[in-house]
Image 1: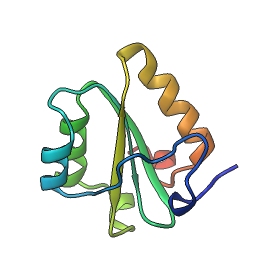
Image 2: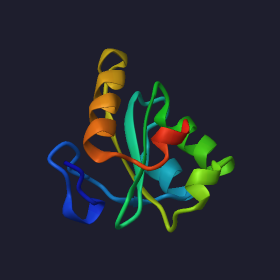
Image 3: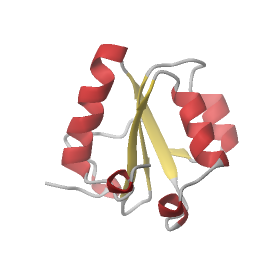
Image 4: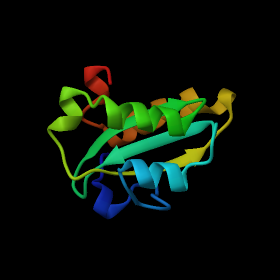
Length: 107
């Protein structure tokens, strides 16, 4: 049961929707924060990631975007903090629910 970001999902109700830019990542994501993040457009879930350092993972996507990411734009992101024990299960449940286009392609 996939929903588009404009019609928020029960699995992932976007809290703060932020433009996917270096400045927004720097200003909004706490340093060394563990959790899950979602990259999306107004109509499409693009990627669900998990990381021990969300900020660094988002910077990596910005600095070295995959071919899949480059097919979409403009991009937004949101994140939620989660412990190391919670991250992978949360990421997997969001992938099943949201069916992001770029997770199937490895990045």
